[in-house]
Image (cartoon, rainbow, N blue to C red; front, side):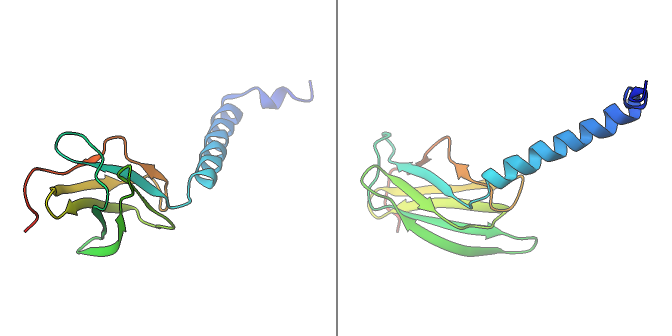
Length: 127
């Protein structure tokens, strides 16, 4: 009988909200390393080694460059320690072409991002 006060809608509502907030904060704590990783491929889908990937932060008024990375033999690139919320990625390689900027909006700053689709270079020259 002492615990009867626990069985009411207010305890369920606010307890549920507290549980969701706790789970969300645990998720954020394990996924806020600021990693941005992906792959660059050419028009036929083959990995591109030596492509330059440009990271640009989008703020309220301007776009500011935040870094570049070069792809490895498997076309992979990684940015670490990024505390961004809204950014663009674009890739290019002389002779292989360019990939149009791709926009990303994250749920929280520093959220880890693994691109589901690779950045695909279009045929042509980057000049």
